[in-house]
Image 1 (cartoon, rainbow, N blue to C red):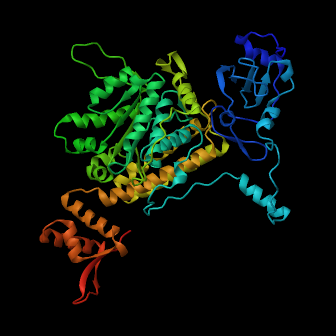
Image 2 (cartoon, rainbow, N blue to C red; image 1 turned 120 degrees about the vertical axis):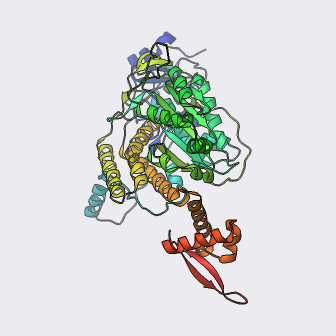
Image 3 (cartoon, rainbow, N blue to C red; image 1 turned 90 degrees about the vertical axis):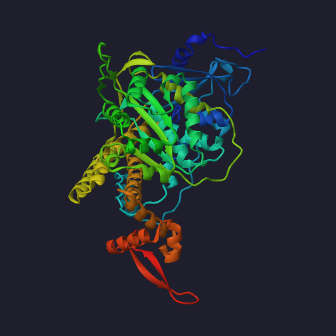
Length: 565
């Protein structure tokens, strides 16, 4: 005989659940990042359901509440949908209800304990060996807002893995790419996941200074390192949520970008060999490529306002583009990118607007796990695609972006970051460093954009810019800034002879003990002896190198040692 069931209408299950009441034990997220319970342990309700095979039949959203209707009751498999559900309240409280009388005593706590019996046990106390006074002092220090890192002018080197982690959507999409890529590359995966969220949040969120999430990301990696996998993942996801018309694969002309964005005001452009575009701009003899660079800069500057479109002869004025949101994910080979830079690109705003990330060397290949997007990643992408903060349809609306606030510690760190960037700008200005001024002039903007994205990745339904968000964004941007300035100084040439000098220095920098014999350098430079001597004399006079004597089996040989970092 089947268990007696409360008579309900499946269309109003959430109202029935509200009438029956929901018992709560701990906060949760949906489908956003982990939060901590009372014992400092992290908990994620969607991961919990996936971990224990609690299949979701249907998800409902109403009045801030999310209801996950289960295929069957966790306590009695004969109780089928829509009779059992996990409920997440607007404030994060969790509940569980099965509408059969035999399950009336079950709540969230009993559900959690069914699958994780030790869930509510306190972790063992660790004796710190500190006195009560020392513990109180330690607690006060831990409660104080974190401080920002200082900027170093030394080469920061490879971006650390700790800066390639973000809670929530971006982190999960990065993990998915690493699982499905033939040649996993964490830097490339993270960069494309960041571009993915930057696109989805376009014209939908802003911070207190009306900063938007439009990014120009350039990922550098060697040929065959897997630069195309992230683009393919992004393209498939954008297509799956019905926004395929917002995808572009190249930047051909300023007019082309303008016309494309008139139809798709939030656009994601993914293009390989970005250095080719820069080389064309650098060596352009007509106005077409110069116009392209100007169009990109104008669209980025208009993200929080309107972009007036060009007038065509004999035609009525075209409607302006409201809050254009262009996200560019470019890929290139490092050597080609730095060789393509010109002083004009470095100082007029194009390169300073870029987030240039350098990928790892090609790693070990794998047989990728070709699976569909994880439930939570797909659900979050769909949520952003459907989110409409304005008038009209999700694909065509007059935006009124949601203000994402910063908490107290977040606001303090944002202020500290601005002051730090302003100080570095002033130092560059005092030294007459025009490139440094251009780069540092955009650092605060980059930090704010990335902190905003961190908040949206961490909790898409209720994002808040926290201290961890700002601290991560600051460390990330400072690393990229330091690496860009170092690489520009050592790879971007004003003329061919300067390029030869930089190449000479690069070969010494890569050599053991940062020195090489004269004969070896002459062979590796592939220049005539006269040009070689001019390079050596120039670098000696600049104090970049010095000659050293090395012992051989016969007469001592001359070598060159690098003196600069």
